[in-house]
Length: 524
Image (cartoon, rainbow, N blue to C red; front, top):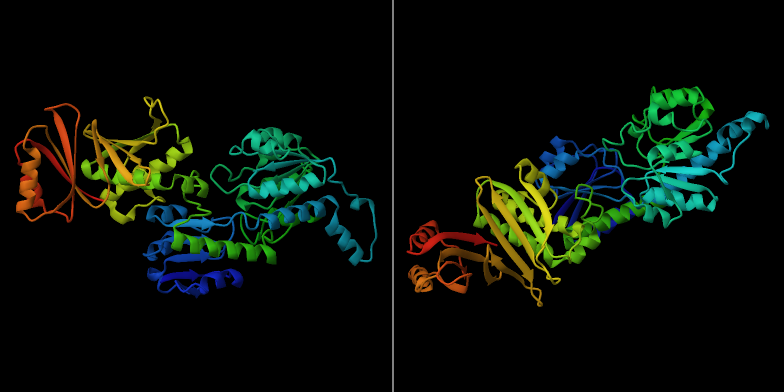
């Protein structure tokens, strides 16, 4: 039974999807007793998941945020524990994009003071003169899901659209009729600036005195993203002295924004109480999508909306790599037991069949396998890179320069801090079975599963008999045996698949056989 805590109000339609599944048990409410028994924790923005709370939830595997931002979750603490954090950034994109235009039209057409005038028995005057969106230039700082939805609606107003987003190619922007430019150029040439970026160290305080000074005096500024992206004192000063024409905000550095200088600017700014995603439709979409993602994670191992996974871990990449992920992990696990110790560098080589993003995902899988030899189940795809960095393990990827045909082989090279090195190569056969095809420079054909004994030895008559006799004397059954060598009479290797693990005493006896140089027991 998967135990799920829902500590913030999340739309019932979504939560009912989980409740209807007999494999899940749902507890709702702010009470946080029994944290050590929960498998998943679902929140919105109210619950603050601090390091202490995350550490108290000893069995926690998944944190789900019903929304976009994860500022209320200690991502470092979750990542170190190997806890996956997911959100549903696309589900409320339409609601936020529509709110952008609600703010923008209200600001440009002077709707709040016009409303106030009528209710105070006044009528039109020159202060209510507005501006059209038609023909204006919209500058989007950030071109993710919400930014794209805003752009689609801006096109209907026949606006010119420019964007700054270092993670979006010019081709992708151009395909939507959007011009991709440097940030300074977007700020200087736009009539309206709308921000749609996550809160990171590079975006915190992005809109400040420096960037505001680049905007036109006639420009207006919209923020429905994250409050900390704006230095509110600088924005208030810019509006007050007429450096920009006005602003509309839905988010604030401190919520509610008690004491913010923006509150004293009257109708030159429009302020709403974080309403961007607050529509009935958006809340239902968010809850349903989050609930389905939770079910898919526990039942099928599928990850959607992973926040603390590397950016390469997109569902389509994981699906395409399929068995190659298992192969990379087995190779890492095999090699870690073949060469235990303090590891210094792990390198992964592939053929050109795999893209650079594929390689990075495969490298994470190999790291997970390698580090599991030292850390057991405490390491997974979420925290493998974190723990590698903690252990000062360098990583890199390369293509097989000698590959003249599109072979699908994966090789990993491991170097220890004392200079010792080992290499392992594997591939997937036509029937989907994983194979180890080379250990070092020695060719072999081994299925990487179960209990294996790798025996480095000299290639001379009688070696196989000696090993078989010794194991037979200990009533140890050999399920399979593979041998490999490069040159007659030189180094060779035999890999045995056994029915059961053998104890250290038997390994010691194998090591002392004449002609044996090393024995490694490997569990896969």
